[in-house]
Amino acid sequence: MAFRMMMLGKKLGMTQIFVEGERIPVTVLELGPNTVVQKKTKDSKDGYNSVQLGFGDKDHKKANKAMAGHFKRADQKPKWVLKELRIDDDAKINDFQVGQEIKADIFKEGEFIDVAGITKGKGYQGVMRRHHMKGAKNATHGTHEYRRHIGSIGCRTTPGEVHKGKRMAGHMGAVRRTTQNVRVAKIMLDKNVLLVRGSVPGPINGYVMVFQARKKLGKIGKVTRSVET
Image 1 (tube, rainbow, N blue to C red):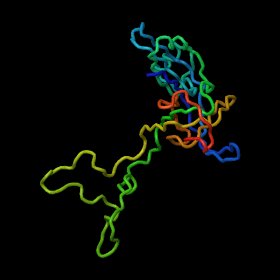
Image 2: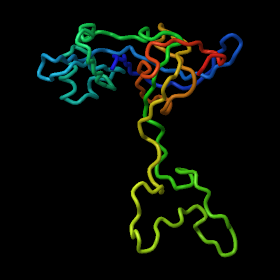
Image 3: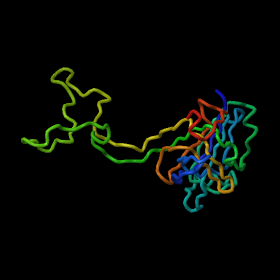
Image 4: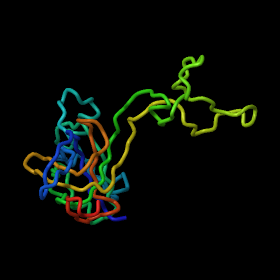
């Protein structure tokens, strides 16, 4: 599989820009700078190639002793987010060094990217909100306290159990999701900001991971709607 570069960032919110007179909705991502905190190689005790990227400076007193020592070995300030990027290409690992800063200029305007994040947590929800069920048809004639209930979840003695995967009430949101083939609308390198067309997973100020697109690796397209989205 071809190597895909990754960066860590934060979702700042949504706004709009105008391209050739057309209004384009965009998500604002604070992307980097990322710092290489650790480097692993096949020749080391780890036995594989990877780099550990850090994003968001953290106060020293907010890091526990184990992590404080980890960052001290790299001569770096503690970071809020750490993610490991596997690199199967033996030649590519030589492009990274501990302490190196990676900025948003590794991406290009119009390039396709994949954005992964943790969706908004919505707590414990019923079946009407979680699975869009209709609920009870009748709201009168003696109907009591089950207008939003799930209804039957099994059938008599056979099978005598609730099948796995049954759509029921439960925790909603707060799961990792990836939006693929999002297009980079604009790069503001002086502010470490990336504007991407459309929406991406997560709440405002939620951390995200931005990859080069798996399905459209290296492809460039225009931002306007006249081009295939």
